[in-house]
Length: 107
Image (cartoon, rainbow, N blue to C red; front, side, top):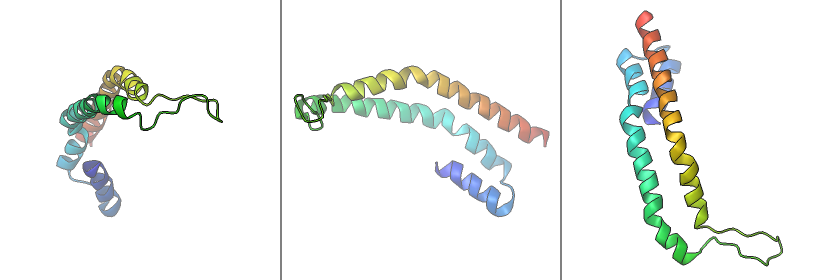
């Protein structure tokens, strides 16, 4: 986000940003996305035993809301949705990169 917002800030303040900053803005994700995804999923995996043992945010029935929530299954469901969506997100960003960098070469 630092790269992205400093790029936008420079464009607003100065009217444009250097071409190397444009390249960095659309290329940093190639390395940062895999690092971020791996660390997020890894940290959730490492936290699972603690979550299961503590049951800190579990809500069991019966209760006045007639609602049950198992905080151990929530991160597993989140990973189950997140991980299959990664290729779509990554290919979308590759398309955005190609569009932005090819546009800058034409100008």
